[in-house]
Image 1 (cartoon, rainbow, N blue to C red):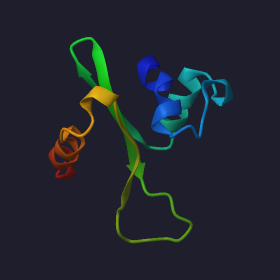
Image 2 (image 1 turned 180 degrees about the horizontal axis):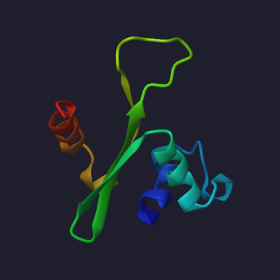
Image 3 (image 1 turned 30 degrees about the vertical axis):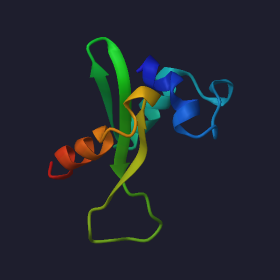
Image 4 (image 1 turned 90 degrees about the horizontal axis):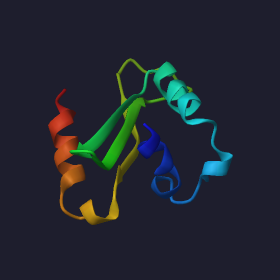
Length: 94
């Protein structure tokens, strides 16, 4: 999770900096406490990306179950090669 944590500034397009974030354990505990899921995408010992997704959080009540992808991140050398599309298609039916 630490590698995912350190990628937050880039994956958030600079919206968050490491100095502004809560400690790594607290950040991911809060995500999981809300019912979110995290997938660490690795190639051996190298983290190549991650996806953070969970239930849609809306003020209005809906009878439909909806989800939201909060963050989909790949390291620069893995971008533009269809990995994100493949990941989403693979998990869309689950």
